[in-house]
Image 1 (cartoon, rainbow, N blue to C red):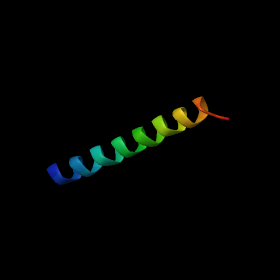
Image 2: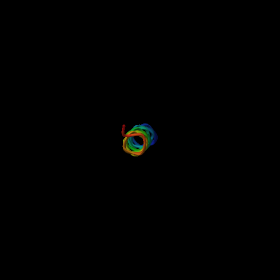
Image 3: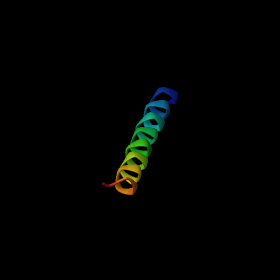
Image 4: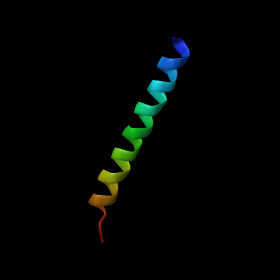
Amino acid sequence: MLIISKYHQANISKSWVKKQLKIINNHFDY
């Protein structure tokens, strides 16, 4: 169970980073 939750957490953080990068890219859209 612990391994699965860790993997799930990693996926969440990955998608969060992607979202942040998207926001930054939109913010600095030249």
